[in-house]
Amino acid sequence: MLRAIVIFFIGLIPITGFSQRRTEQILINQGGYYPNAPKVAAIKGFKADKFYITTPDLSDTLFAGATSGPKSAPYSPAETWIADFSDFTLSGNYVVAVHGLGYSWPFEIGSLVHSRLAETSLKSYYFQRMSVPLQFEFAGPWSRPAGHPDTLVMVHASAAGENRPEGTIISAPKGWYDAGDYNKYVVNSGITMGTMFSAWEDFPDYYSDLDVNIPESGNGLPDILNELLWNLRWMIKMQDPHDGGVYHKLTTAGFEGRLMPAEAVKQRYVVQKSTAAALNFTAVMAQASRVFRDFEQLVPGLADSCLRAAEFAWEWAIENPDILYRQNEMNKLYDPGIVTGAYGDVNVSDEFKWAASELFITTQNETYFKAVNLFPDTGMPLPSWNQVRLLAYYSLLRHSDNLPQFASGYIEIIKIRLTRFADELIDSLEHQPYHAVMGKSRRDFVWGSNSVAANQGIALINAYHITGNRNYLDGALHNMDYLLGRNATGYSFVTGYGYRTPMHIHHRPSDADALPDPVPGLLAGGPNPGQQDGCDYPSDIPDESYVDDWCSYASNEVAINWNAPLVYLSGAIEALQFDAGYSEYVVP
Ligand code: G3I
Ligand code: 9MR
Image 1 (cartoon, rainbow, N blue to C red):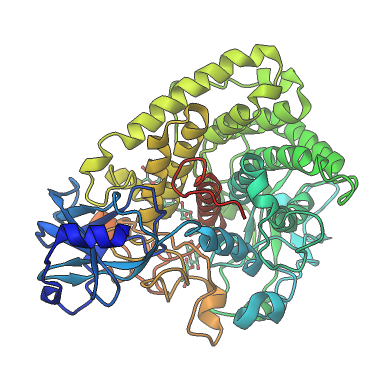
Image 2 (cartoon, rainbow, N blue to C red; image 1 turned 180 degrees about the vertical axis):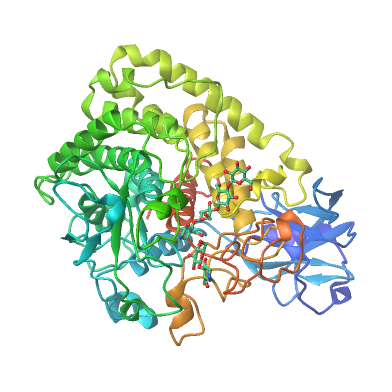
């Protein structure tokens, strides 16, 4: 009926007039749209007054609308016209068509459209597991033999101490590969674990039911926690049991070649302890302790050991508050030189805040809280591997009902600042060329810029939580649209998800295996005008500085700290779609 009416109203549109070709210039969310959510496409470099929503074969036109534009970003000459079809709410499969230009990739309108993204982004961590074979049952064509047992890891000269002299062999198996390389870095594991534990803490009902077909599925623990446990078991081993200090990373001296995990067998080292590692470790262990406390029967003793480990590392950090990881300086003193990822954070004041907050929430012991200045300024710096202040704020907000009374003043400040920050994020969204929060500033385009888009989404979801204002959630959803195709490159940046997706990501297993398709569910780093890899890019424009080539580790690598906010964002939006009215809840 509705369909008949719509067709009637738009009348005699000459449907045969559509150019019979698909165009890359009509940019959509390749993963689809919820029925009652905002729905927008961007038409790039073509002045279109009108657009149409048609069936994929162009035979039926169901909606017609006027575009708005041109729109552009200050850092790019590109112009777009925005096609808003939010009023079209009929579930089904469609394309956006424009006379004289062509039509878009097909897309779906429906409830649960992002459920597969929530699953595949989480499942990607299984593919990053080390020290274990990936079995066909769980990994399908990407099954492979075990790599990196990490049971014979050497203490590097930089990490030597009385109890563990240089060359001591320790065992620190399991964990995830950090990225396209084969090393494990405590700092980057910190924000990754914190973000994913927060997804669990914020949306326990959703994640309780999310089964992603991993070996532990069905064991009683939700799969997100099963997966986190895999990396947690490694992290615990990165603490020196003699003094509580935490090694900065577990690594080969240089990057491995383009080999499969099992073939990459160079000597592995744990290197220098650092304050940043100790504090990331503290925060993760403190959060893990309270999360696994609820599953004591399934993981007996784990919550207690995590808490002990957290407190021990915290004490070490208090006594060693400024041991930075400076790889170049270190290499002047010790052999072999270490040239893998540094994650060399030079300011650990935010890590202190995060670690103290997680310990405070878990133990309710206010000494932790009072050891740090939670509000050194009014800033709300977006999370990244070297900036975790907001992780502290998010956790405090989440647990505000269970904190001692004196904390309520702090919570109020966080609420005010987070709301203000969210207002800034969504401000003038409608003027943006891709109708996204991401890209309002050229500063968004850093190495791993796609994680900026996802982390902006998390900030907005937190603001939605405290205010119930759907504009914030809409902003988060628009950034999801950005990541899945409505951006200046036209890529859906998640491997195996969408139509135009990265095929040559900088990910050693995807490169070295014999399969054409990369491991699925991985988020490419994204546009990065720094172009530090020196590869051949199609453009120097910030939001177009992306190339789907193995060469490009500065725009086309994957990393656990970039995928984690995608896990959060996709899971959160799926979990909230009914509450927000994006989809109608149907009693099963
Ligand atoms: O801190 C400066 C800032 O002051 C300046 O304004 C800005 C301008 O671009 O640069 C900032 O430094 C950047 C730094 O990240 C901190 O964000 C560097 O330019 C940039 O080159 C650096 O990139 C890091 C890259 O390693 C190289 O060190 C990425 O953030 C980081 O995600 C990436 O991580 C690698 C690991 O080392 C190894 N494993 C793979 C992983 C992903 O590529
Ligand atoms: O593969 C490495 C990637 O994980 C890192 O992010 C990147 C920057 O540190 O370095 C990559 O390794 C490259 C090395 O730095 C230079 N030689 C080529 C390597 C990749 O082919």
